[in-house]
Image 1 (cartoon, rainbow, N blue to C red):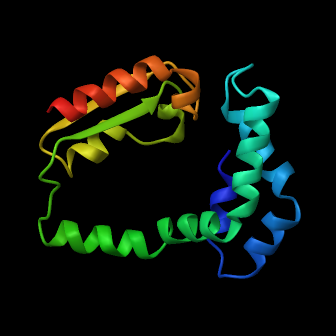
Image 2 (image 1 turned 45 degrees about the vertical axis):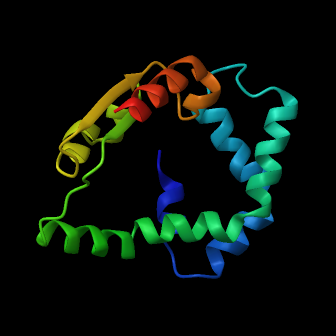
Length: 143
């Protein structure tokens, strides 16, 4: 399910080359798998693919950091007792529990003022449920 995480966590060079060589197929497969049917009309899909294709090195670097240096920084922050002082809102797609972690518990350890919500949506919540995302953002900004 998350094979792309292992691929993009590899040392620089090969993952970027592999993803760039098949960028539209690579990113398109996630749009197909993670979106609800009909949420990506042709023009929107083309925009996502173009933007992703143009930013392969940055996208891969972000995933690589998430598997390495970000974990080191998180561990150092936990050891120092650091927490987020601002209000935090976490939106989790309704199938998120299938990923094997409890987002409310994870973020609750970092934020005293946490609003966790499960959204009836796939990975692309803003496209699938813009009404919910806007309402949640307004709520966060008012806190």
